[in-house]
Amino acid sequence: MPKTTAIAPIRHSSFVIRHSSFVIRHSSFVMLYDAHNHLQDERLDPWRDEITASISQSGIAEMVVNGSCEEDWPQVAELTRNHPWIRPAFGLHPWYVKERGPHWLQNLRKQLEDHPTAVVGEIGLDRWIENPDIDAQLECFRAQIALAVELDRPATIHCLRASGLLEETLRAAELPRRGFLLHSYGGPAEMIPTFVKMGARFSLSPYFGHPRKTAQLAVFNHVPLDRLLAETDAPDMWPPDELNPHPLKTADGASLNHPANLRVSYELLARTRDMPLEQLEATLATNYHTLFGP
Image 1 (cartoon, one colour):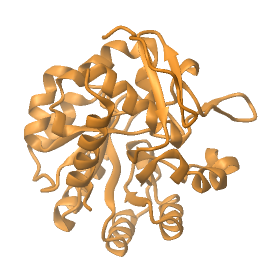
Image 2: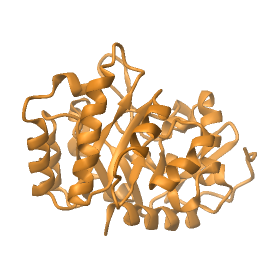
Image 3: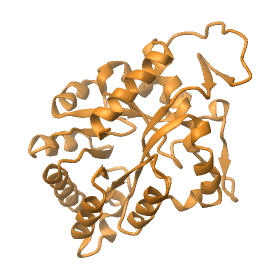
């Protein structure tokens, strides 16, 4: 990981956060793309109006807002109607497969058909949660991948402690022509080439700035440049306090991630890849539109 280098004096439009071996520079002049968040999450209710009003000042051009279950799909749709910089995603997250209704797949299809630019997501496999129903997860995951193929949509995939099972399942399936995103990729570097051949992209969140995530952050050096993306996963995956220019705390003191912390993800990637931020910004903009569309 490169060591901190000296920086020029800060202009009034920028500010810098120093942390460990990183220098995180924030500027309002660039347009960023958040490949994955949950702006509809009820934990953001106290701040959502403020967040949406300040998006343009945050330098964010577009974000993919991911639904996780039947109950929050209408909220994602409502946000999309009100904010043109939101690209919706609708999917059944593996954490909620046990709560699915009998017509969940038909309801998902309707949301996707009603939103022609929508992504299929967040979907996936998760062995980390307590008492996972892997059979139900696989059934729902396969059905949603098939729907992405049928409707010619990209997909966003969640995977925790299930990389081998995910690879096996994808290998046996017809895959979306547009490709898919492995968001907040936490798998090993050795699996990246296999996933790349299947059409994968890989996104990094601000949480990888925590010192305990140093090894996983280094894995992103092995991702082909044209397969990199950045995300926030807000309100989850917040950066460490030293890197957090937009701290949010709930009434009981729990930390939340602000969508404007997307800049932290870009800076972490730029520093880890040892490339100019401006070059990374242009590359990620191209990668975003290649996967998700214009």
